[in-house]
Image 1 (cartoon, helix red, strand yellow):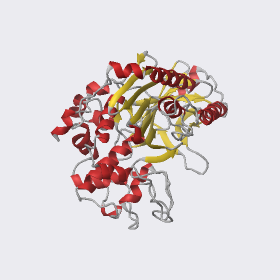
Image 2: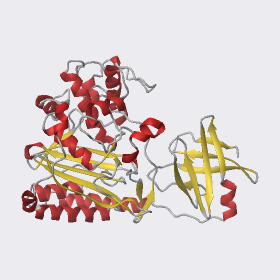
Image 3: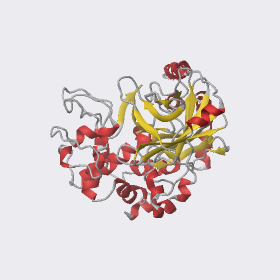
Image 4: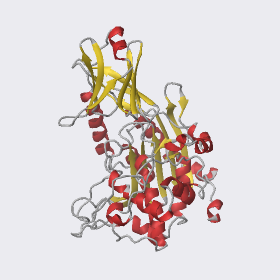
Amino acid sequence: MNRFLLIPLVFVSAACASTNANRVRSFERDADEIRNTLRIPGMSAAILENQKILWTRGFGYADLENRVPATPQTLYSIASVTKTFGSTLLMQLVEKAQVALNEPIAKYPPSQGAPAITDERVQIRHILSHTSEGTPGQGFSYNGALYDGITNVIENKYGASFADVLARQLLEPLQMTESVPGHNVIDNPELARRYAPALARFAKPYAFYGNGEIVPATYPSRGIGASAGLLSTVRDLAKYDVALDRHLLIQPQTQELAWTPFVSNAGKQLPYGLGWFVGDYQGERLVWHSGNWGSGFSAIYVKLPARNLSMILLANSEALSDPFWVPGETNPFTCSFLRHFVFNGDDPCKRAAETVMNTWLEGRAARAEPTMTLDETVLASYAGEYQQSERRTYTVAREGTRLFIDIPTRDDRLELFASPKGDFFFKVTTPTRVRFVREGATVAGLEFHFGEGEEPIRAKKVR
């Protein structure tokens, strides 16, 4: 494992940088313009060529309220880009002949009470390729929850938590010192101290709402598994990218297998390999993964293996990859990257990307709803503690004419907005509605409503 320590983060020489100045400058201008259009508060970026960093920088703010700039060292939740790490750890086990891709996933029960996959027809390769639903191997259906079955395999084989295995097998050997194996490290005093320098640079999460409004969002779930949960920076992901290209993590043939489109039972090539999206655009082979929590954080990681070229983007809102923008087709950032670094200024996907981007913006504006300002005495009657169960209590607090609710287990809070419909809603991307229940003139509880046909969750006011 000492061979990993010989891989410093290398930047291109001044001479090479000079020859790349025009395309870097053009992409940088485009990226910032797209970021502003999509109202992304903060974004960090890196481009690598021939296993060296060609360019890296931060845009906007990691903390909008306090005007803390985003930099290449800013920490983000990379969401589903974590799946590529889960794939790499699993493929290491395959190389050691400790795991076979055609084994039933049912052999590996979850270690922490998560639902088990019991269908004996479902093999590890079906989970890695998102082809486990319905008839295994029949078709592609992206499902992050099912992909977490890979967590079970890794934890069973190593006899340790996924976070520990990830740190020991990848983060530490690659000296990814700016990364954190799960936000839940803050619940462990020893780990919290160990990762404190990185967590001090953790970006605040935001969401885009309505007509240009940026609102605070909650941090995602603190846990980590093969599907999601890694916190990282573009600098650390650049180290990971170099290690992949130097085949220091898995052998070339194993990596190629992971980067080969999975073939369905009917012989059809699918858009996913083993832990990676794969595809072809205008004759260029793309290997990539996106990440998106729905609000708060998003990521896009695109590789062109034949050109030894990679782009890494991390942001503190959902807009890098929401909706599911496909690189080379509709993702505006990737279109600009390809235009300036591959197609010499031609724009084969620019128009399609702009159309999708404008449709997304229009959709956000259309779903915005009016709010009401309520009397402070009315708001004060809602303030208090609401108990859902012995372990879950919500705290509602009034601040002037604004109302906030704490989110248990996340050390987070969201603002509640009064609707003319008589209930409250959040401006983050969630359909949840909140209704306060009165008994006479007294507020006795609250209800969370999630959609038609779903039972509300109720909490009794206890204080």
